[in-house]
Structure formats: structure tokens, C-alpha cells
Amino acid sequence: MTQLPTDTRRDIRDLRTEDLEAALHQLGHPAYRARQIEDWLWRKGVHHFEEMTNLPKDLRAQLYEIFTLRPARLDVLQKSADGTIKLRLRLHDDHLIESVIIPVFEDHRYTVCVSTQAGCSLSCTFCATGKLPMKRNLTAGEIIDQVKLANQICQAEYDHPLTNIVYMGMGEPFLNYRQVMRSLHWLTDQRGFSFAPRRITVSTVGLPKMIRRFADEPYRAKLAVSLHAPDDAKRSKIMPINQHNNIRSLLEALDYYYRRTRKEVSFEYIAFSGFNLGEDDAKRLIKICRRFPSKVNIIEYNPIDGAPFQRASESELQQFAIYLLKNGVRVTVRKSRGRDIDAACGQLANKDQTLTA
Ligand code: SF4
Image (cartoon, rainbow, N blue to C red; front, side):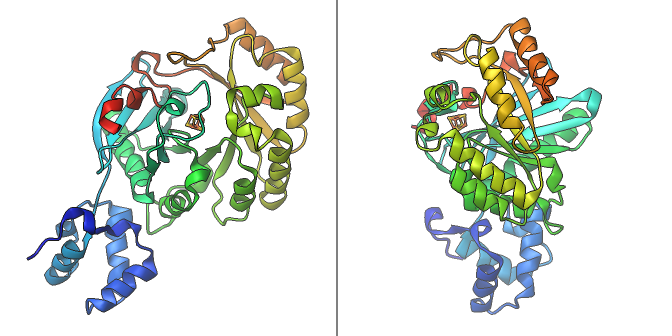
């Protein structure tokens, strides 16, 4: 059997069903084989054609000649004293990405936070990933590899499957829209990972055009928006994307999202000491939250090297949260997890930059 050089073969997971059926037709095989192959790829998650044992041998050999499978592989695993597990994965082209498993034992909640891009182009000032150069978008297969690997590790470590998935790792999901939607399809489809859409959250910096597009999708995953500051001047300082996509346009897109989906929106709000926790900030945030059903997740900051921010004190954070609560805002406070293992997004991949440069 002649094997083509690896880089000329296409990853079979990049093919849509109809393309796979067309390829099979050309090879002289019936269309139903596409369903069998997809079952191996997305439900069973195999990484070798030889494992597709209900396919004829000649078809497996043909697939191997024409296509490839390039899964993301575990490179480093770090476990925190609080149970948080950080995974660094190596892609076939040596780029590094991260996923984090966050267990909340008392609630039996086991969440994986997945990356959607290797690096990020948005340069938020508080984020370690923002300091990495943007390398490339991940494929749907690479996004799902993170979930499958995390699920195996969660089972092995905690004897429990994952219960939640958040698209909140490296990269901006809506800048890799097509692959993110494709991954949502295979994660939630009965022929794939069969994960409940209501247990999946896509977190975005808030690109108005893409929020509208997402509102029109059939996938009923939840939406979270990284707000982090309630006015344009402050938000633009920490999130350069706000200079061209201001809060007003963001809120108009969220109005549309709510009208279309009737689903509440979560606002992510990192607590930066002395920056976004004043009374004026709280008042602006309350006004935003009254526009449509929403809640605010206040997140303790995990400081990174070179960022001009400090973690807010307990009293600063509590005062802000209580003010919001008293004014009818639904608030949760998320403690920073995995401080002992560089658990802030991008910190671990940043440690080995030379490998990705
Ligand atoms: S916070 Fe998200 S969007 Fe901003 S730089 Fe980091 S990964 Fe990119």
C-alpha cells in the first residue's frame, strides 16, 4: 500500500456527511458506510482506521491512503490541591492548547473548559492567552478531543463523567464560528457525544454580528458574554475589541438574542481591584442587567505576569456583589481555582512558547 506524505491527506473529521458520502461513492462503497464511519469518529472517538471493525478491510485501507486522523494528544497534566486539573494538549502541528477540568464535588458538577483557537488575536490585557501569538483555529475534531480526553480523565480521577462544557479556554469561539458550531453539533447529536445542550455554555467577548448569527442557530447551548467593565472607556482599556464593538452594539445584539431564544445571558465579570468594582460600576451593570433576563458571574482574578491588575480583596468583592444583589441582580461569585497550577487561561501554553513559535 502506498502511503502519501502525511501533510497531503485530509483529516477525515473535517468532512461533512455529504462529502464523505461522495468520497465513498467514488471509492465504490455505499453511502451508509458514511454513517458507520461517523459513528466511529464522533460517538466512539477512535483515532485509527483499523479500529473501525465493521468496515470491510479494503475500505479501511482506502481510507488510510486518502485520509488521516490527527487527534490532539495529552502533553502535560497538572493537578491542583483543590482538584482542578489542567491539561496541555499538543496538536499534530506542534501547537499547544489548554483545557481545564473544574470539579465542584459538593454539587457533583464536573466542568471542562475547552479552547477553540491556538493563541488568540484579541489581546485582552488581563489574559495570558492574549500574550500568545494567534496560531490557528482548531477543528471541530480538536475541540471534541479536549472534551473526550477530559471525560476520560474525569472518570479515572473522580469516577464521574463530565457534567458541563464551557467554551471559555484559549481563543474567541465566535472567531472560529464554523468549527465551533460543528463541534456543538457532534457534541449534542445522538449520533455523537449526546451531551445535553443546556449543559454547554459558549463564552464570547461579545461580537454583535456573531451573537445575532448564534441566536438564529438550532443549537440551544447557553451564551455567556465576557463584560468585565460596564462602560466603554474602561472596557476598551482592557479589551481592545470594544473599540470597534461597543457596549451599545453588544446590548442591541443581546436584545435580539433574547427575542429569538428567550434564554437568559450570563455576564462574566472579573473582579479587578480598584478598577471595576466601584458604586458607579455597579449602577451601570445593574442597568445593563435589567434590559433582559441575565445573571452576573463575578470571577476572582488569577493574576498573570506583567498584567497591570491585582486580585480584588474579599471585602471589595463582597461589597460589590451585595450591592448588585440588593438591586435585584442574580449574582454568583466564582473563586479562582487551581492557583497552584497556572490555571489562568493561557498560562501553561505560555510556559513553552518556543514549542509553538
Ligand atoms: S480573554 Fe479570551 S478573547 Fe481575550 S485574549 Fe484571552 S482568550 Fe482571547
